[in-house]
Picture: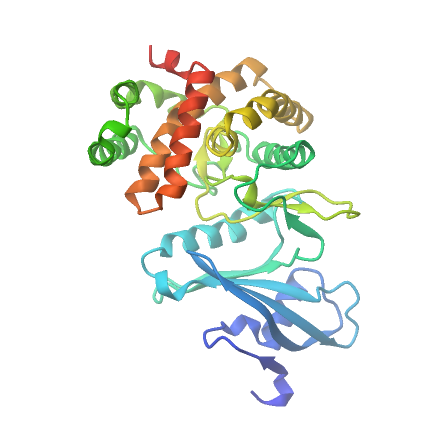
Length: 363
């Protein structure tokens, strides 16, 4: 690259053009974080792969006035090994950052300075705020959070749900509604997966649990009315375990941030809470935190201006979501997620269903 256009030290052969200094300068100007100065040099500080994406931490150097400009950024691109099979996740996440985030309050998710999905090549990129120095993941998987960590996480989740609660853009500029026909087709597909799942497990899936699954499948149309009411719904994360949140490091006065939005959708907000607690936490930890975190969640909704949603309605929705989450381990098995994950999820969520009396919802 000619010196007049700046220097890019690349160790990855497929970095998009957005990392060129001139394009980075333009993106940061649009984001309001760079005025008179310009990006002079970009280098790769670190990179790693996830199942869906390739994560690159970029270091930036400037020429001219750059006070307040970021010294580093996160570039997220498609994992080339799965670019086609998992393209919809990238498409979905780019849509979230480019269409929804500009309409949200600050301090809930990382800032996005640029994002694009190319339908021809199925390549995509996101240029995100780097929170590495100010934030950290709460624990190493699979350790549950401390009470204070859980409070910070649930507070941010509630504020995020509140930002889209019964929003007029739902189903229009923000996501799409599933029809009753869509729900029925989804359940028919699930029933096929479940039959194969049950055959595989044999006597490792008790008769009581088999009856629970069959009753859920039989009652799915009635249970789905909660979603199809289109009341007290929001944008949900879809994978809201605690390791998709970044918490402020010690001594940093800031809020928790949510990341990884390839599974967001319009849904019942308690789905995220049930996935976080009933699916991921063993009974002792869940029972110690569950009630107080649901209280906190409801209080935060009220503080955020949500009205007409009672504490009792939250409890009903939470139990409804926990019941539906018995389907999640089956879906995970169906896409070859390892038993280390789906078997433990199955055991934990089944215990939560029993603890919370969720079977009553089946009539």
